[in-house]
Length: 555
Image (cartoon, rainbow, N blue to C red):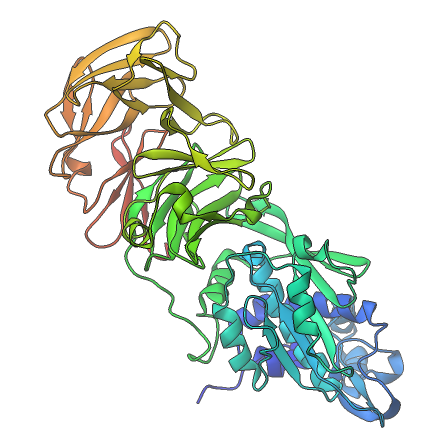
């Protein structure tokens, strides 16, 4: 049996619902709860009940002076400064009026959107809104039922709030819902029921009626992600600061709940298959199982775990957004965590279009994440050695593409393409003739390396030809780095030994060798991510020869 939850007086009206959370999480969520309650009360004309007055029913965080609790009046006499502080912060307590009516009381039916647009910060808003609506339902003598868009319409869940939160916590949908789905749900409600929808701007903009629709989306961002969220109800909106990243992560992973039955596995397993997918300072790795990825800003950000609705095939950072390509029902779909990016939320590409089977997806979801690039509103991704354009209009293979690398701009990847008997590289002089059958590795800027046989490599940079280098057979070239001039970063045939190779010398990087998987090189920084046997990932600065950051499940 858990100990009673101790909350400040300002959160007393919502204590029954907040008791599902741990104390620190309930306190951190408190400002969101109070402000959302203000927002909803303002649009509902401050009424918490219908019918004739019938005494009092519990406590409220607002009301006329005549309903102020006697204890608050005593506080005003004995500690006037504290009274003023609580009044300014909306922390005074009032008696909540009760009403009675002969009319039938329906339920408060809350329908939640769990599509890609409501991942991350919007889920915190949903949790706070569920706490608010649970308390309002109780004060009106109604029960609260929960519906999840993406499930069978009409499967409303009633009962204890903790059980409802347990279902909400794990609910994910790979696609954005549409108004017809909302209509299917609401058509099965009784006339006396009071329906609320918690969603984002995409669905809300297509609804014919936005009565009792709470819209939330990320508004401002800091170095560790979203810092402010906008919440809209009717014609009113508020910009609300989000709890700290640590608290938010605990809520989204289910470890911020007092009842173990509510939480889900934190997935705090080892990290694997690291990649630096873009020129941004972000590392992405696979986490616990094929549907989880972990992202972290290097060198100082907190790791963030992201559970996706299906196996993850590719991921990248575009600006301050994390875009993930996942497979659901034999269809490739894009999930964007952060600000919307074009029409990617509408992307739906059948596996057959890119020549993949379900078995191929299962195998790929246990390996290294495929590269993913944004170009002209569409995605570029590699499957089985072939590049594909993934679009909401026409997805197809790109047979002329040899390889792609991040560019200077989010929407401008650097492409090497086959043109007749040669390969042309964006940014490289047209006088450089690379045979069409060559292997090509792209670095930052104009740095390019190519080889016909995999052992003799020619390195090009801005001034022209740098020189030729030779590596042992079956050596893998990870990338090109600039440390006192362009050099190849290579991995031995056994997958253990990392070397720097230039025309002048070959240097074995013993300290950064011996990883349990292929290391990943940042496209524009001399950073190498090395997966270690203990499930950690070391990020090395090759220029300084020191550990820049060690990334684990939680730090």
